[in-house]
Amino acid sequence: MDKKRNAVMREIIKKVSKNKISTTEVADCLGKTGAIPDIAPINKGHFRVGRVFLAYGYDASNWAIHEQIEGVKEGDIVVVESYNCGKRAAFGELVTKYLILYKDVSAVVVNGYMRDAHRLIKENFPVWCKGVSPIGYFNEQHEKPLATKIVSEWKKKYENAIAICDDGGVVIISSENINREFLRKLDFIELQEDIWHHCVDTKKWSTYDTVCLKKYFDTELLPVELRDKFRAFLKEIERGGRKV
Image (cartoon, rainbow, N blue to C red; front, top):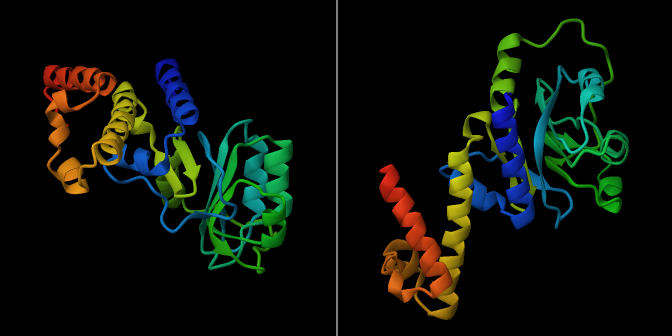
């Protein structure tokens, strides 16, 4: 990743973290895409955002995972994929503790299952997964590497990407979306949420008037602060020839 895009990545992470921009809002910015299906937090109330570090297990062994996480960096969000592992748990409390406490990663996301659920809950670790199982992977060294095509597909999705994790699940901002246009989308989604809540909570409009008819486009109906921000945004859209 070049310096310019790396700087934009840091800006996105900072903005999402500071403003607690939810997975729902980020997914909206991505055209209602980006979620890892069926992923949920084991412990509620955590909010994490960071650069993705990809690890993966295959053929029911977590040997490769142990080897790969040697390279994890502070603040990373470890995303673990699996191939030909069924519903076995990738790992449990030991690896999670090592990553969270000793490698200082932000979160652990397993696109599969985890074990030692009682310990993960007791320690309130920031972990997300599909579910839990007492039956884990084997720890056997692989005889051959995983097919390049499979690994390449994962790398395309996760390399130089950002993960946002909260009670709604996990959303991935892929590298192709790490640009200033996406920063603008984040600004707009926050403004839109503020406007919608003002219309429903303060003006007592229906959700139909607010979300569908968008009556707030008559900006005189908005309070000054929201009005000025929204007008500035509309002018920017008009200059760029884009649609809201």
